[in-house]
Length: 291
Image (cartoon, rainbow, N blue to C red; front, side, top):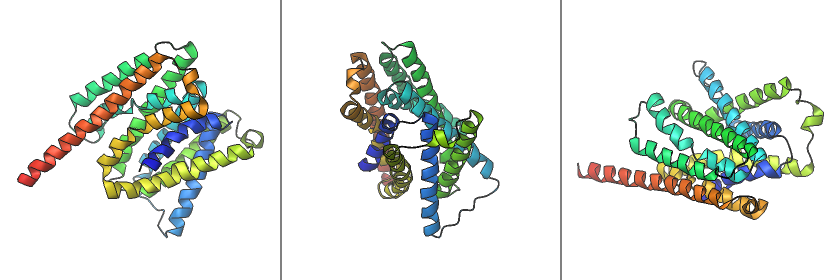
């Protein structure tokens, strides 16, 4: 499980290591991941058919996924991987108000308050930012909003659609959508798509290992350990990314102390929220056993 979370944390670092525009990074990522997952499904002799009724919803979510990755890598290239991954932590706040609307779940004031504390952490992070870094912050926060939308909508769609089918068509939609965006700005040509050997290797790693493999492995892990255990540990992803950014990109040399105070606040809230949920679930299970 922690290998998968580490891989997810590494995807942010690749936004700096791959010397391509953020749109081309997303284009190659969804293309490679879609091909890899498609091959897996064919070799597994699994049907690729989905209900026509659900297809518009899948396409809509696929476009949101593409927008999430576009804005995520854009924020990284404008600023740092550490900033982008911390912005992604605000996804929890958006899920708090989205889930009651989409999943008909009871609104949680505790989660809302914790989401506001994440905002306080973001304020610390942005304390000494320049105009360009503030721009990157806004784009990163938009990425988090997109992440919340596709997480909640996928949670609803996955109740009746196989997870691998859902992901395959969302990746395919993401590829088509990104292609249309690149075509509209004149960047879908051989010259712009040209890759160096190093960039190709990193993109292959990003598409196959960090996307397709990570997704399939997560399905197995969730079945073995349960969704809550996995979601609790995913809160460690920002820590992995920040540590990797310090070691590989030396981002500690360009980030102020207030950034790390804000990061510590955000990570404390995320882990605290996860632990509180753990105690709530344990308490419910205990009483259900007594009943």
